[in-house]
Length: 226
Image (cartoon, rainbow, N blue to C red; front, side, top):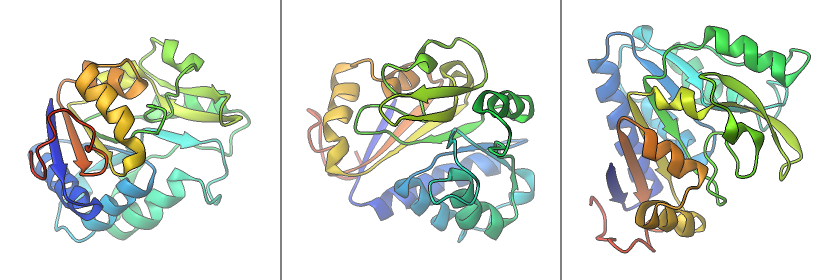
């Protein structure tokens, strides 16, 4: 496990873009798993400034909200706007116009590429992708995309399972803000079994890109670039 502590969200975006670029240039058939949220959004903006062979890459989503594609909360819409439309990279997205979230998850499972490099965030409650605490999705052992009812959000989410994320070559967590500091300390210093910790513990390779605020409670905090 690699933990890098950076000065700002912009620094996270730059370091994350460097990792993505390195992966794209080295992989035979790059598969890039994308995350929603403001910190990944900064990385996507940075990636559009890089000269990369986007025609060799396939992008997909680690999770999606059960909303129409034109909804403000749609990860698909955000990714298309910030990354995939500007670069013309191939992007396979879940179809939230289907009748049920279960049908959409099954259809997406059928077209997903191998995981490759996966970008993930973490919530204040320790969730990652849409693997929320106390949800049925945490029990799934299928290498798939599933519909996961999230009681605390009163909604369905679509998400890659632990088993699907286990297959990634590299998992990169992008975490900014003091609101995440308690969970980061619990996961990195104490191995508390939050969903994000479970993904990190099982990953072949994992990198944490943290800003100083998110890393501020770590026992081993040593400042930028650790």
